[in-house]
Image (tube, rainbow, N blue to C red; front, side, top):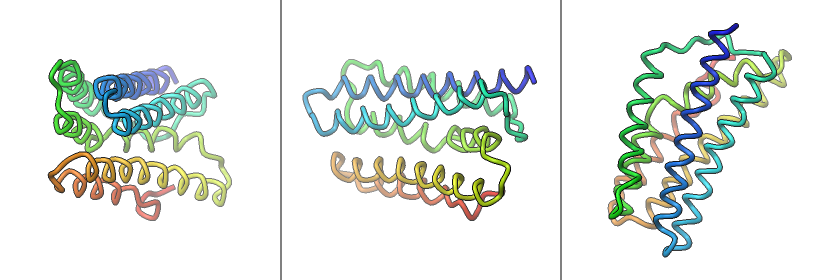
Length: 176
């Protein structure tokens, strides 16, 4: 059980770090209220992910899915890179979206989904319904990125990339 608790704690920390990155973006673009508000919203999404992982850890009902240490290390290194980008004083909107794309395309959301899977109820119908809600939230998260990228960036490739990410969160593709 100690290993499972450590896994939840590690990924809870990664979600918090990503929330702080998005909060830095929110502050960096304060002079553009709509863009700043977007970054604040996605930071809240990441804080919600962290809170869900903490709830699972505290309730002591871990997922049966294991997460390889190499996955954690890869995401940790990736977020270090993104953190350094977020600290640039002359950060551009494109650089912020690029950094976000790196993180959103990583396995962080997949691990999150696997880890909270253990907290879902044992009844199959309830489990399916909650899983669909969780996947819909992840799809909406990436769709918000796509819409913001379309609005704030001249390059349509960013919006397309985020839309492609939203397609990977199809509840029919994930086993209960």
